[in-house]
Image (cartoon, rainbow, N blue to C red; front, side, top):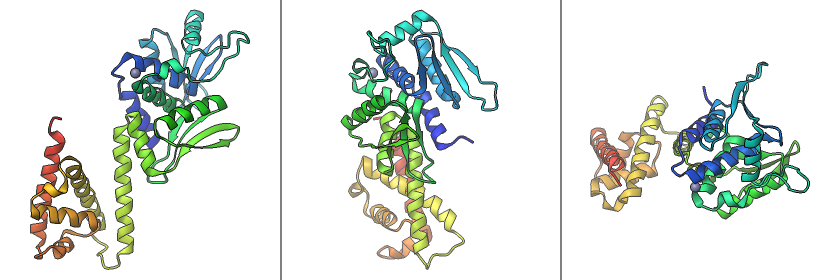
Length: 306
Ligand SMILES: [Zn+2]
């Protein structure tokens, strides 16, 4: 089964750039963060076939030829190489990667590829594909970008700071790590890169965690129906948040508004318990009926064209 990080990268790979300017930027991100670069060879080595796929696809679109393969030892990693001297020369100059005097490769973000907002996001998408990881939110909240190059790490840090993300920095095993641990920042960062499914998954996990904490705290709840109550509650809360976003809870009919507010307040309660909180009190089937209306309404809002 794919890890959360792998799923995020798969989603990024499948998110197609709508503008061709972004291809150059995204390729640059993978190039700088994921490849070893020399005047003789540009080489990507990765354990993730989606990263390879994305690199090869972007290379092809930009007119470069990659030789793709798989390492034969037990690590079974994927490789993509660019060896054509003309193409290497083109890449080195397009991305200003070579110091004209010393002929040394410099790992810096070339300013001209991150002029547009769309390209900045594309570059970061590539950088994450090449050198990023995000931990499964069920375990912990952590997203990081790792590189052995201090200048590159600083460039990325600055780019992200300009775009509203304050990363923390640390040196680990002589590599430069920039990271975030706040779940909301990670959420925003995933959507910044275009990984909306991953973002939704993180939100789900968060809601579930919240509810579980609620449950642990509550001594009166019956244990048998926890799981069922929780998964139903997660769906209901998402629906209510959807409604809140699109039309606001104030615009709901009174009876639906009451139950929506109660659900947000008492996340782990069963429908029967919620009914007891209503004025006047409401039976389980009554609550269920209203909840169904809320779910249907949210479904409707989602499918409505913008
Ligand atoms: Zn662009």
